[in-house]
Image 1 (cartoon, rainbow, N blue to C red):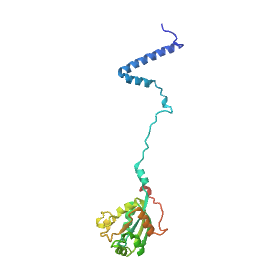
Image 2 (cartoon, one colour):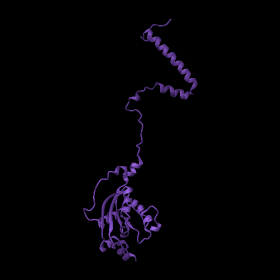
Image 3 (tube, rainbow, N blue to C red):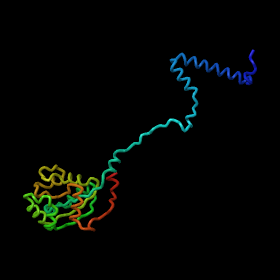
Image 4 (cartoon, helix red, strand yellow):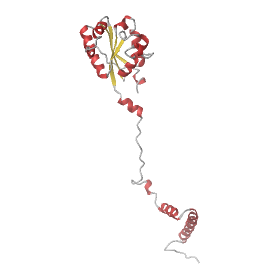
Length: 228
């Protein structure tokens, strides 16, 4: 005969507890038959642990690694440079001014200074002072002062190195097809165009050939379509 109370519990509670106990025992038997003793013990302990960690401040945290989009990183490290480009007297005499300017424009660089200029001897000697010891120096000075030159200041990301590639090798016979010298010149002494060989020289030569106030500062509307 069933006892009506178990520790003060009602008959309904007593019956419910027995049913739960019997179900737990049957589930445990099934699990124990399929799991090893060690795995069964681990499973049983896990089942008894409360799920309070879902709302606890001590919940395990997921560590997310910060992602860097490298092209943006590289772009941010690249600085805007300035370079001095000069169309020499042979380029002006041959009517190549528009052709040469268009190559830099199509590349996407920004023109900040432009003028037709008759170079005095003193300025030519200062510009080519690194070549004073060369036997061809007097001939070079005569050549660069023989007629007007076109002075240009260009601005852009990597403009110095890129402009050198557009211009081509000093000896036009060694310059690649598609470059200015490769397409338009045949001899070193008449190689049409000059370009700064470093960012520092770009600044120095622009300051040498342009007076204060001759350069224009402006924003190109196509800028966002050229550089990220």
